[in-house]
Image (cartoon, rainbow, N blue to C red; front, side, top):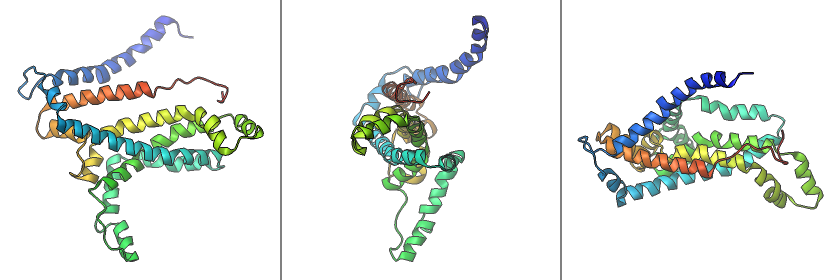
Length: 272
């Protein structure tokens, strides 16, 4: 076994990586948030951010992130339960994981082809006699594509929790006269809540700051905090205001991580 000094030595690369790629960038963002476009120290960026325009933009960002998370949760939970009962669970999980190997930009462009005016979906609608529909550059297409992309990230932690539930507890619940609804509410869901929290965490946080999917799928129909940061850094060159929005997102993400924090404890309902 390694002694204390050896363990401390092996921690050095990790600490250096953490300081260089996590702590330093956050401090740099906080620093820029207190400077205007001319480089002068100011608090005006925060006063601008808390104006009605950006407050409304923040509410829209939370609303769409909430919708994406809820849709992913509603689909993922029963799907994870079904997969856990299937004898082909490994193969089904592979099919779900495979799309995550593809770059998000490529998947987004694929949906541009599917939902475009002359895309596959509209061609099928034409065949049915419905006619060409405007499927792009609206909130529906944005939520649909975002939910598709983040679905595996919600499903996998829920699946890990569901598959780890002790089946004897479920059988005992049925033996004691409980129906499926009661068993789910009293046994299954409480024992899988850690997976749900983790899924919410890894879905809601990135959905809150989407910008690439927003630009390509929703166009200028949706302006959220992610697109605002992109615009201030790349277009207006107002790094101060962009950093202020980023600081707000970092704080919110930290709060979400605290609220959805899960501790991996072995309980009576879990498998060791």
